Length: 188
Image 1 (cartoon, helix red, strand yellow):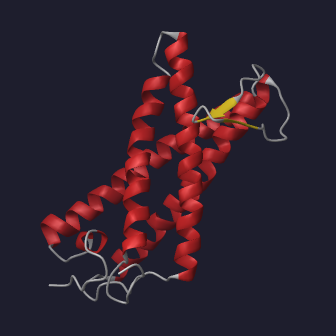
Image 2 (tube, one colour; image 1 turned 180 degrees about the horizontal axis):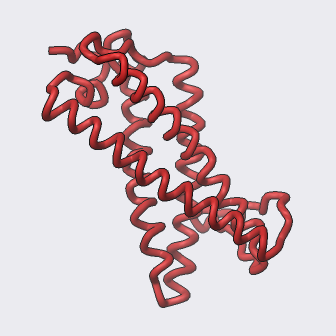
Image 3 (cartoon, one colour; image 1 turned 90 degrees about the vertical axis):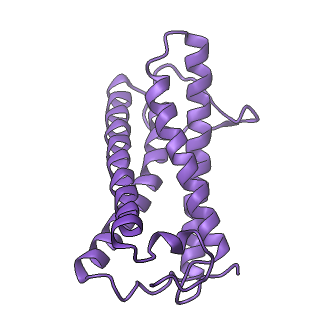
């Protein structure tokens, strides 16, 4: 079942979720590693991969949002409390916002850099810089924003994962199973 039902997520929503999740976890590890590498050639390659994966995540997030607009999400489980529904909505909206803005801030950072290093998307094409002013002050601003958003993303991902694990192992209410089994009713 490709499309969502009122009871569960469809195969495409699940595929988007897990592909983005794996890429984000890899991106977090890559981002934390690339800034600590002493070898400049290796650091350059890791940064290029980081930029490429960031753009891929941006594209997948946009596609996922378009799919969500055309294919609304399932109804919340009846067992969820009002605060859980509100918290879920808030965290999901923040995740979408951060993962839309985070790659754009990285792109702006590269574009504002006085070094003028190109972005080689998966080594296949050069991404043009955004029309932002090139300056050390601009580069510093975008770096701080990008870093702050990255740590915010890490916190949101941790909250999201812990909530899913709580629902699965403690509450045993089927919330996580909805992202594992296409279109099926998962409430106990």
